[in-house]
Length: 136
Image (cartoon, rainbow, N blue to C red; front, top):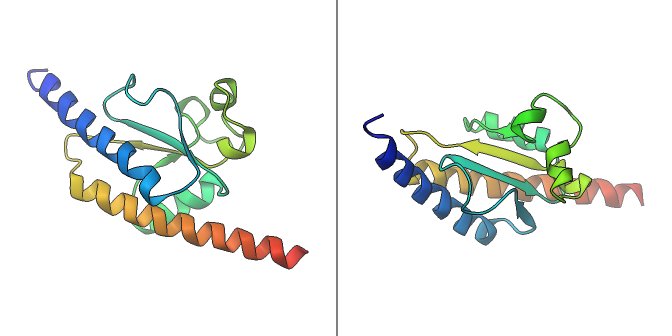
């Protein structure tokens, strides 16, 4: 409890830095919820053109822990009813990703996450585009 305020400030700074850099490395993302009026350790966004489960598998292979969807729809393959209720289109909600920061989270860890995530999204979007072209 005695470190709670300091930790909240540190996590807020890390979270805000991540959100500032996210659109620089990945196009077509939607931040879920208010950008600053949220828990200090919460990063939640949707990536257009990819499925959350595919993101999770690739992130897991890169040793990055994340969750898909919203906390109240964990384990479901359907888009989160919470995300659709706040206006996120169903297809975009399928690409939802949630990261939780902790006391041991560093700028370097978040930079690694951003770089890795950008490469994964690029690969998944490319694969989806090739698949779509093959169907035509």
